Length: 170
Length: 127
Image 1 (tube, chains in turn purple, orange):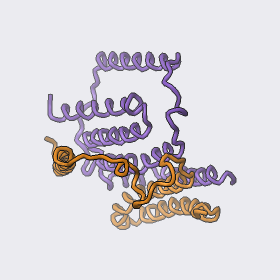
Image 2 (cartoon, chains in turn purple, cyan):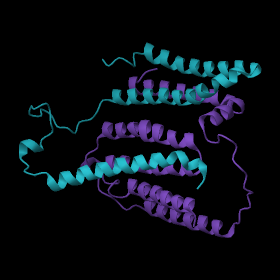
Image 3 (cartoon, chains in turn purple, yellow):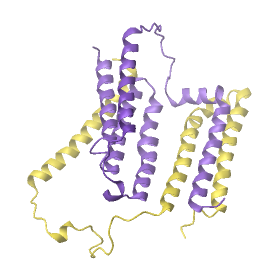
């Protein structure tokens, strides 16, 4: 196994374990621990982006997700500030059981597909500057200018939505 | 090893150093520091005063609004950054210079509409 593969498995294991701990104890018991574990998971995810040479994405994953979006999550947790009593006792419902079965079935199916499928994608050399900000700027402005402008509209909707929710009127 | 990983060697070295230093400080503190807890030492610090309310209070929704507005303009900068990095190259190409400038101006104008809206609605006032 090459150096890259060892790194990939380590990072992938990190993502899975920390993500699972977000909903299982200790994260499942205290939402703030869950939020902190999600940050760790984002760092592992950023490592996976580095392995794909998506350098800008790796930096943005930490800046935007682990930085800004996690602040929002923490704010929501502190806004609600549910006590143990309000959260209620852990219950075993049928829906949760069905969820576990579905996840296991999906995992088995994925493993089977990966086992039987032999992918024949020819290796191509990467273009110069792949994954850097310049390459992203070129793709964004040459090929995806309209989606980019629509992203601006989406952000505008987010601004108006936040103000309307907080002020309760348009 | 792929040359694309070269810049990350220093990132890795720095991460190991930072995590290691943090761990060493915590372990030394645990091993060497005396622990004689009293009730006064255990209460939350409020500039030396006795705390006059419980720390577990509900936070105002205004904090959330400020955070989400920050996030929107944070993402705006994320898009401006690659554009700014490439803009001087695009200016050399006469056919594309207009699109490069106009495209970003439209994007910023749309988000400025949002800024004007929240300003007019008084979303930036704390009350």
